[in-house]
Amino acid sequence: MSKSSAPVQGRSIPGSTAVELSLKDERWRADLSASMGGSGRDPDPHDLLDSSLVACTILTLQVYAKRKQYPLESVEVSLLHDEDDTTYRMQRQITLGGALSQQQKDDLLRVANACPLHKALHKKFEIATQIV
Image (cartoon, rainbow, N blue to C red; front, side, top):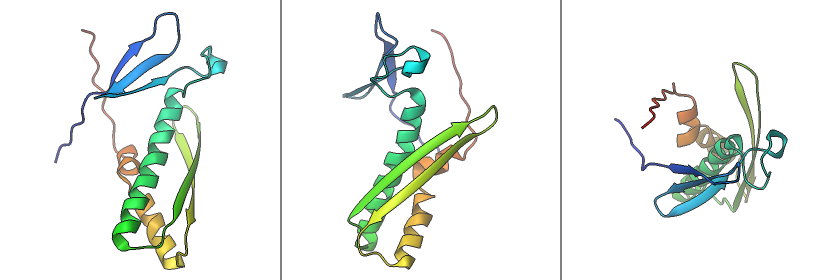
């Protein structure tokens, strides 16, 4: 089954290294890191990728815990990454709040590792690019 998304749009901001991104009516920005010559005020593209996995993890755990009626009160996720020429490594730490049993925590870990973005990041990526 093929899934498609609405297009994410991006445009340069004159006189800046920052870009404006949009999806439907939502707007946000990204920039180069300060060490790369950007302002350092906006997330860089790697930050956006990492934050996508963090958000997906939290949302997936909240929905699943509610459906299973687990006493999940809060979720915090911290993610660090490093990379070399062949591997982009993500280290994700999840802190769960609430009176959860060890079995429920183990189940939530399983679910975190099956969130939609986690699964997508394990797929083969194909990128078709054209200049119009």
